[in-house]
Length: 215
Image (cartoon, rainbow, N blue to C red; front, side, top):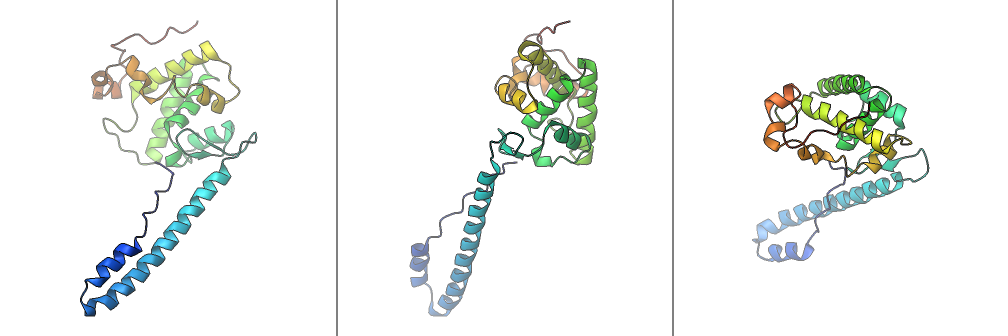
């Protein structure tokens, strides 16, 4: 979900007056009433738009441990412990469950557990969260086994090659490009990964192997 409020269309009073001139006399009074209501609604909407923009600017604080703007436009005000608890307790707002949020959770599990355990926790967490948020299980929605397993593999490989990182935010910042959403298409063709087989069970890549992990 894009949290940026949509721009308010310009209220064109000259165009309204142009239309007013060509209305029958009996309709002009009703037109003026409607015009005044429209102008008031526009003013209220514009004031709300300005207020939301100001609140978003106020929320972008650079001091350590305070709120910051993530790459998707969502405001995350939680440290790693609070964030992981919110995910595991299924209280994380649905519009905060972005690709960056997936990346943060994957880092937190991969940095604490071996790959099989981290993957099990990620799998269980996503399934529980999807159930709590009534996310439908469709081909391109809901839990996807191959994406989860392969993504956890890539996160673990990145930690081995480039770690350690201070926290999940630092990891997400450093890997925003290398672990972006389409990264798996380097390893899987679209037809292979967007298939019911890949959704239900792990399938091996068909373009190139996943990185070799350190023992």
